[in-house]
Image (cartoon, rainbow, N blue to C red; front, side):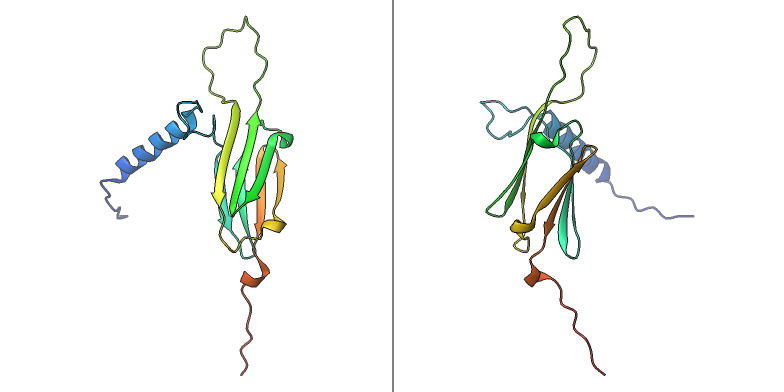
Length: 146
């Protein structure tokens, strides 16, 4: 028989995360709301490897020509736009869930990131940004003599 740990707040925490995610994706930029910087935000995974940081963003339907990546003062900015399809007037849409418009994400990079070597590639709607670490920060192997 497997023991299961009882955590009474886990369902409440899960509900809070789902609500935050829902409101973040539904947020629309408007002149009254200067906090919102985009109409939608792509999901992003960030991982650290021994020699670099890798940022992977889901940007389906976004042309690589419509993606702008900049680095300034330790902040990596990812901007882009997914264009809307031309819809015919006589189409009767019952539900529209795909979000179109601009997106804007910012990421603070650690001091170990090398801004000069950042590279990006986009393949099948997945944007991968490789941020190398500075050479001075790389771990150095020290041999132990007998």
